[in-house]
Amino acid sequence: QKEVEQNSGPLSVPEGAIASLNCTYSDRVSQSFFWYRQYSGKSPELIMSIYSNGDKEDGRFTAQLNKASQYVSLLIRDSQPSDSATYLCAVNGPGDKIIFGKGTRLHILP
Amino acid sequence: DTGVSQDPRHKITKRGQNVTFRCDPISEHNRLYWYRQTLGQGPEFLTYFQNEAQLEKSRLLSDRFSAERPKGSFSTLEIQRTEQGDSAMYLCASSLGGVLSSYNEQFFGPGTRLTVL
Image (cartoon, rainbow over all chains, first blue to last red; front, side, top):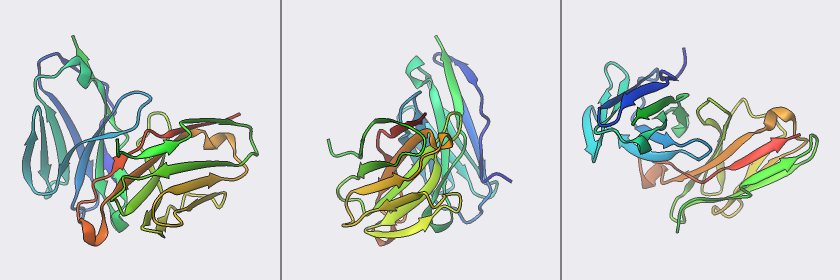
């Protein structure tokens, strides 16, 4: 079983709509969860961190965490063409390593 | 700008040559991580340091790879006898960790893209 799983996409969303990105993880003791945005040819950029069950909002982004279901999601409201990128889910794993999923490619349709 | 920096940004080398990459972390961060990323994959953990101590090294990392962080500031990653399979983006990230922070938010540098011919 893979440690962090994401749908690879591409996920196509019309401009102005809500993009919903999902991630599951296998290690029940994980305490820190992250979403990174990565543009093609660039390095990952941290956009959201979440540590407690529930929702965390930052501008157009909302991260959701459900530890019982081992599930993390990212919602992007009012999607813009500049949001087109690969979104990496990451989980703090054993020994404080960050374990990354393969990423979901998001394409915002103008 | 006080973000993570990496040098060089690009490296082209011939198979069998040695290469060395440098990473300068955010100055107040005590942890420094090295990752490797290939096309279509997420970053893959290689090794990490807390201050000058190397706390963990991936079991996938061959003994051709070595990393140092001699004074707890910048770090170097050396690959000896490079192979074509080493071609990848090598990413460095830094964070506050251990007793300084339980959250371990990692911030990445721009990466070094290695091409082995």
